[in-house]
Length: 378
Image 1 (cartoon, rainbow, N blue to C red):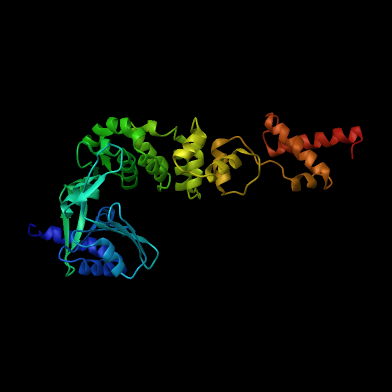
Image 2: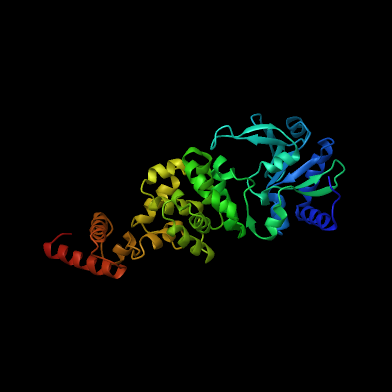
């Protein structure tokens, strides 16, 4: 390993200082117990720390240690995943941290799961998706931090550039295309030319890459899902999603302070889809987004600020809040069966497009009541 420059040492200290004190303590404990190879914090945590963001997701590569044995020695709850030799540890505050045995990977079938093989820390960094995610903070058993950059990720991070690590990256795993769009939207990164050059191959493999649908679902959890979808469109991959104009509109509502949950974004996407049920199944959305969409399209009144009202304002911009039973009683209809008849009459007028405001409904109700009075109905 080459001697560290003053700049590299400063960057390593900056990453270390950006971590929570309790996370530093845990990482020191892991490195001390991991043997001669120490431990390396890798990926998004290092990237985010260099961007001045406190890392919360901790992924740790162990070059030499037995992952299962070390996880057991930590005294914390953990789940071991034998297929890849990883362990997910539950930290005292409830967050999950991953312990990963250093490995390299090959893809026997593009789009399928990679085959893990034993490897070095350098191998592990080179198997990753983008250079900005291939940075590592290595800790020796004595706790000395060293920043490792074997793929040019630091230069790309300075340039706000998103670059895949090799020419077959997106073909091997087309889900990286969506993951890259999420990252680019969140961190304001620009696609490198070789990323854009791989988009057609990724789209060719999209139907053979089940993980891509999981990434599209995660896109709806981004701070600005519409922006992430817009990145995909800008890269020429808009065909992965139906029209996303409603996602852009929900981004604007969220930016204005409205509470717009994941289910609202999912419901908006279903509304634009030619096959909503099929899309919901592929994205594993469950029933809640579809139910929310049905409520937003209905005439049922909902309070201001609810997801139903936010969606209704976009999907039915001319819709008005219909009269309620309380309103009908206030206009002179005695409580009882007559209230239901009046509400049913108003609902029929709304479906026919004959009332377009609460005032229209009041006028129609008065006419309805007058007709019933002339007919002698109670």
